[in-house]
Image 1: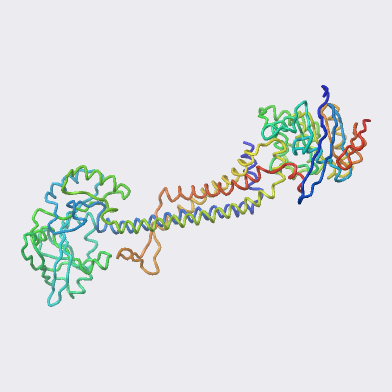
Image 2 (image 1 turned 90 degrees about the horizontal axis):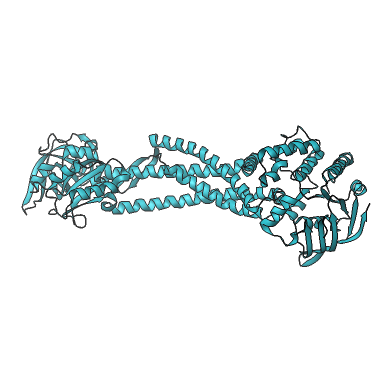
Length: 405
Length: 230
């Protein structure tokens, strides 16, 4: 108790020095909290754009489809699978899809295109499909002979709403697949490369064109909480219980994207280590000065019978009280800035392109780890660097220290 | 060593090494101090007074020879044993008062009792009593910076005595005080010595202490030059 009392009062003894030490701890905490919150927020925005707005969090395919996609590798009992998915808690939405490639033309302009067959009502729930339409409207029905094309493709084809688009592809039975569809909308996904080749057909219409009735290539699933993807993926795998089809999380089907994100996360840890180092230097400098100045006092404490471990405890308590105050203040400030940026974000001077998608705004996130990690960083770095001056103080030779004036 | 002997040193030697040069601060002191003595160790600067006191208190270890306090060979003690022995048997009074600046008068005085795990009520009782004895009643809540030099030294004396140690070691206790304050302080210590029977050992240049000491040990070049009992 007396150690705590002395430690607490010592903090207010050299106010300027304590403020300097506190500033380096507070700065370190605040920067770390902001950095983690902002990184998490930005990553989640990007992941959300990649998954919720396009790929989904989990996908179901025929077992070998991801390694080598083919028109013939289909999910043959997809209606049954959809019914099973509806029973799984945590599955937010799901959407069956068909993919193929073909040549499209409008008037005398033609281009290669990627054909997406989508169940419009389910796709809207899964990837906000309707929000991607920047001109025109969504399909008028699930069996309408209508097509929505990407913005880039519309420019290549110089196509306008209401014009007719002809598709030539290959049917699953080996026949030449071709038909004409009315352009009803132009879409923008945020990925410019994709928008130059994308065209959407209603699922049933696409199944008819490609002779894939009752079959799809993919079922995209979204979940309520991004952190529960792996858990729900396991539930889905168990539920579908099939040797022919498999469910995989986004970290697997978008591996290169996931790896790039992981590399960015590693960069964040490097930054945190640098912040830890800056905090450590700040604390070491002031604590060492303080210990040297109070050498006589430590000598006196030892002369009176205070044990070296209690002197170490005294100095570490002083540092830890200061760290605790800084963590509280830093949490308030960090919460404030992360909350503000989670609502308003930071506008990039130039849009950031990530995986072909452009990001104009980066937002922060308020989460527990953006406070816990900085708290551990500040506490641990301050304690580690404080330990060496504390050890020096504990080793003070009382006889020599008392001769110091 | 008979029953009344508190301190006994035998051929005490302390050598310091500085830049490869050896300097003998104490060259072989053998003496005995008995219980309740009011003894002054005097001598010119560099005669070995402070080193001698540090060796007796266990703050420094002898190069050769032995120190016994209360029949305990403290020159062989180390670490926790030595620090506990010092806490329970020796009270220190230093030239520069050396109070803990962030603690109040009461907290400074009770510090050693806290280390000894004396219960709170008893600590408070003893602090009040000793403050009365050193003439500082009512100043319990003051910080050292709010006291005069004389008052600070009285607090240091109270702190040294409050845990009833066997021995009070005072290194130049009046050196930073004016003669009037020094005289008052000395008078007080003499009274405490007579009433409590505690043994006082001073190192000093102060003529007043030399005059009032019952025993005067004069050191020169690390050796006892004279040892006079009055």
